[in-house]
Amino acid sequence: MKNISTDSLRTFITVVEVAGFAKAGDILGLSQPAVSLQIKRLEELLGYKLFKKQGQRQVLNQYGELLLPLAKQMMQYNDSILQQFTTESITGKVRLGIPSEFAARILPAIIGDFVALYPEVSLEVRSRLSKHLLSASRQDQFDLILALNEQLDSDKFPIFMQDELVWVGNLAQANNSVVTLVTAPDGCIYRRRATDALKKAGIKYRIVYSNADLTGLIAAIKEGLGITVLAKSTVPSELNFQTHSKHLPALGRIGISLIKNGGESEHAVDKLAEFIALRLGY
Image (cartoon, rainbow, N blue to C red):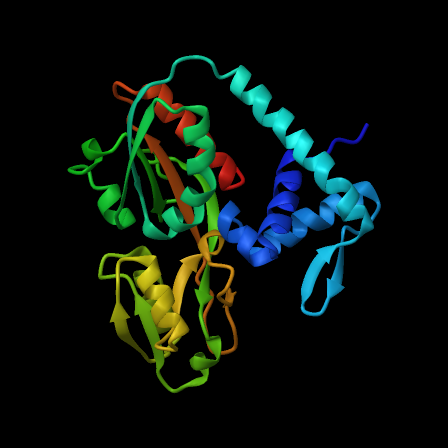
């Protein structure tokens, strides 16, 4: 018997409520292609298209209108079941350390659900470069750490998933004699991987802007200051990306570590780690 994915239904409802695939992706922490893929799989499972083109917008057709109230009802049942079976008292404080690009990608999608299920848990989130998060002297500042890790066979910080590194921004700029980069400060894995790849390929580059916060980098990219490097799963839906091109070298893959330091709120840490792993598709 076929089963409908609740993730697909939640995505479908969100697309309708915010009137757009890109906006839904921002809320759910998904790229626009990932949102489109979920809707496509839902349509294939049901055997009907759910949207129709109206000008430049995608709106519900008759089958989408039929599905919407049923989807909402099913999600209410889903959430009610979870709440009924999470009556265990989970309390405490979780100090989460996370790079800014993952904070922008993951946190909007999980904070509401996590807090709704575990209202007695207090979250303290701080964004740092992965290098600083993995520093032995700083690990005791966090109960849970999500960080990039270049050592794919690391025993100390095991890799729970890998991602592809991509060039992000107006990639036509790479046709210039000098590639202009916007990056995080020195010590950033993305920055080092970009400069090392360009040097190895014999391509001249210049760093024109540095900012540790993803929001600042996105603003610089939109203003046309340069391009940057990110893990593919963290690229905002409104930006272009590619792994390599005629003028840009491939960047390879990166590991992602999810490190639990336990402490007094160990149960809450475990639950938050599950939320993050599921949101990243692991």
